Image 1: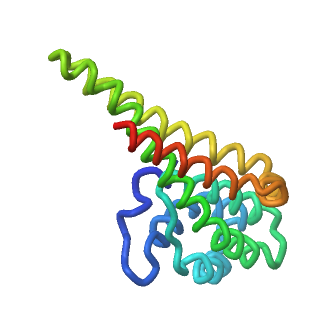
Image 2: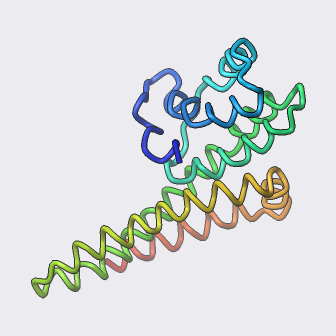
Amino acid sequence: NRYIFPRQSPFNYETMQSGGWVYSIHPAMEKIYDGDADLLAEKYKDHFKFYNTHPWMGNIILGACIAIESTKDPDATKQAVEMRTALMGPLAGIGDSLRATVEAIIGALAAGFAMNGSIFGAILFFVLGNAYYFGISYFGFFYTYKNGMKVIRDMNKSGILDRLMESATILGMTAVGAL
């Protein structure tokens, strides 16, 4: 997945993560728009606007945006950018809360082994942490790509994004407080 590693490499203070975003969507956009360089340049002007979310949650937005673009609707890019803008804040909050919670839990498990002098603690932290992050990135992308805007509409209509963010924040605060 092109988004996992370079997402923040071309980071700048004007567009934040947009450079990594455009780099990530390029192969899909090239395939969707049959390599039309002029059309792609126009579409990338819209995509290369401010974008900043939690790095591990960005793939969820990426999958939905590519699903929208693949409709080839004349307004697809505008819709994708609007959806990306609407989701980057809530998913950043969810990602930050989940990250704090998961790292605290995995860290506590790993610390138990490390305190007994076992290197297994460090290995456990590395393996479980990366499995969690790559799992969210990989499955989040393909799930939202496959289901497109239906996922976002259903989550928004039911208020699950707000409830998930609040629940993750409470769980994170509880885990940090327990430590």
